[in-house]
Image (cartoon, rainbow, N blue to C red; front, top):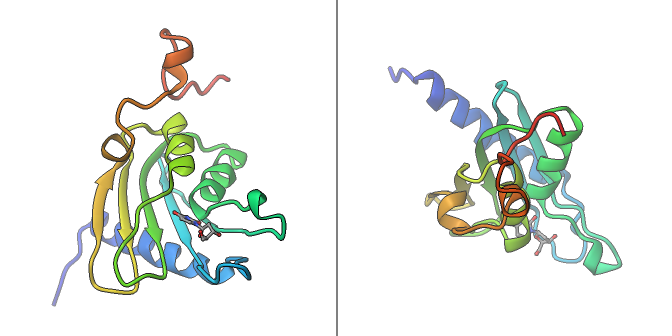
Length: 148
Ligand code: THU
């Protein structure tokens, strides 16, 4: 019988959550339902899906939706992101989402899963090197300033 470590179990939960929230995506234009699940420093899982709009520039990606929901829930520190896309191979977050994630977690580990067996294990440091962040504006500021 397989025995899973706590972190493996947590990862399974995050993957299940990312896949599950994709079912809630509002994507009548692209028919591309994406799910994202963030593990917060306090151990919570916060999920988000993409929400499209007839005015297409207003569409929000699953990853940014997850970040905004987490921030609204008082969570600003993240340990892991899992992204599900309905593709045969894993795909990574778009540039806008990378920038938004970097505000809070510039080295965030990211796991991308899809409808096939492949996975992409990466990190925000790899996807967005030399990022523009809070410290670019104020070198004294840390990337996560919980007081502001
Ligand atoms: N999308 C995401 O939600 N996350 C990504 O990483 C890539 C793209 C959404 C935006 C749009 O609703 C649809 O996928 C097609 O681009």
